[in-house]
Image (tube, rainbow, N blue to C red; front, side, top):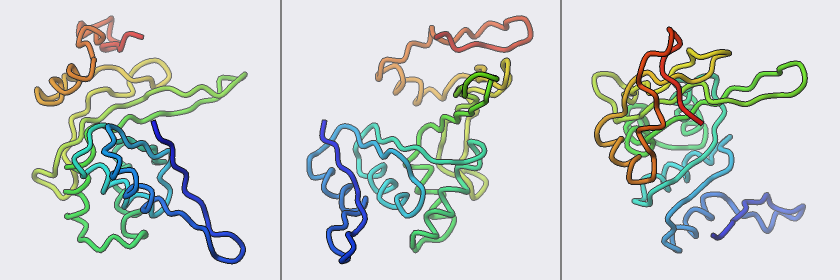
Length: 185
């Protein structure tokens, strides 16, 4: 594992290291995974480049109010960061680059802040609309808005998940008293 860290320029304006530079440098190492801790501004451009570089397993965190709003957030960050593509082209790029969106919520339970998975989307290239197509795998229908299995991943995604070590037996696909299907921990 090799860790890289971007940094701002010093007070004389020298020494900056951009995420774009780091992604290019990381790709020279032929990595199996590229993980970007947080995408907040123009970092989306090198992240999408990394995700579309043929490397498996890229991942990043992004702030959005819902998993479907993540597409708008990526679009806004891309446009704000100078990505000179039409909106449809950005959505196609995202549909080709992103496989799964995992939405995490946080709630204060009176003693501490608790984070939990509330929804998981499988992402595919745009179909009939401008936006990427989605398969809503887990919905926020469990207690407190926790994720509940809604449907099976596409056959291609299920095969990729199984290759990565996911066991379909972890998902109880039987109805459970009106609460849906549970992801076993």
